[in-house]
Image (tube, rainbow, N blue to C red; front, side):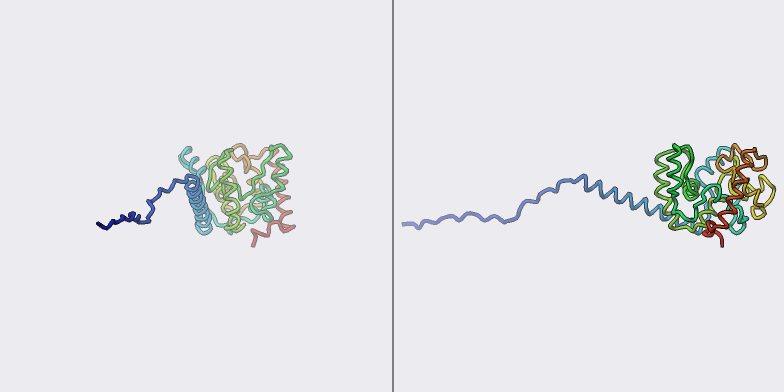
Length: 246
């Protein structure tokens, strides 16, 4: 009688067929958002770090005015070539708490809100960021970038450097940028020769340089200049100019 054999069941290899990984769009999106944030942060740090040692020659608004007018008047001067009273006058006029804040003057912001938004609260640091890196005009994108960059500039630059850049980039008349061009334009002298009255007049026209004149001041500009002179003397006496004066 033939021997009956039983067939053993075939063994499987035990390997599982590869499974496809499902795409995860949220993870992909988070990764690219992180990369974008790191890229922006790197660019901001590079831009602010560069201008600690390199003088910014122009800004977007200045370049726009140069293209519109054909040419502009601007010459960079170092901080020690500017009359100290000019620096004090600008601080007294535009940002009396310049030495005590970190880029945003919270007291001035609260006062501006209480006044219904009819008065400005931008610090000198914010104005430097706008003049050097950004563009003019009321725009939420610009405001967001300004809010991002202002603390970085305060962290990387000294207070004296912030003021030096401001004085060299501010607009004092149509096509006239910086204190050197302004001193020659209005008074025919260099920025190191400015008197207390002349410095106060230049500071008095800064909010509206195209509508005001330092050499032909209106009664309003003259009164404002007198108040700025008093303010400049006050911040020197009470120590609020110590952060930018040697």
